[in-house]
Length: 244
Image (cartoon, rainbow, N blue to C red):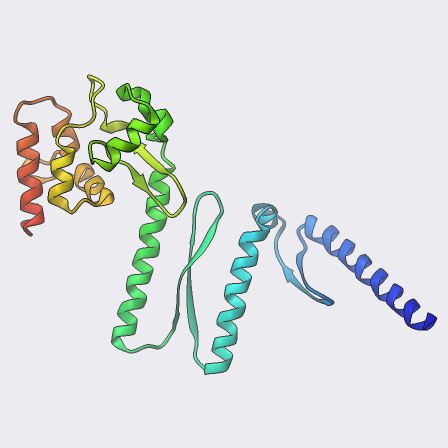
């Protein structure tokens, strides 16, 4: 019994020394050490890249788990697999799709759609990180309202609020007019364009030939009496399929 205990102590000490060595090597940028009980594997990595992921253990865990699951499927089925990840500016990563590399035409279309959604999610995250994107608390004072009122106005489509992959709604600062009022005509645009905030956002920020190359946002902020009717007509044409 004493011999078994001595072997256990030696094994524990060996693992402890191994873990400390791994920590020293990882901090110097030589490799990362991944533990699973008594099993250990080392992943070479540069010092620069180590600095980028040093505080992202949960993210790395998800990525490694996703790879392990896909590798197991590939080994079991004999097929290659494609994993699509979206990495946001704050360093978070989310698997958007996992599909066999060789598929039927329909499956290939699904994979293409998944990749397009992943690109869209990345672009949305970039937009929401912009300096013009405000929280309800920061946006409220611009229109003389509390953050609760801002949320109510968003639900009524009186102000534009945008959501991405992460939690929280952001409100573009540019939707406030020079008189401190929400952008006119927003409820009508939501009604015409299907009540989808990102669709309304793209419509407002896109130049239209029918508006002389100006964006709908520019026209609505001019203060012209006919601005809303002019922009609404363009939205109706777009919704009907007559894209400018």
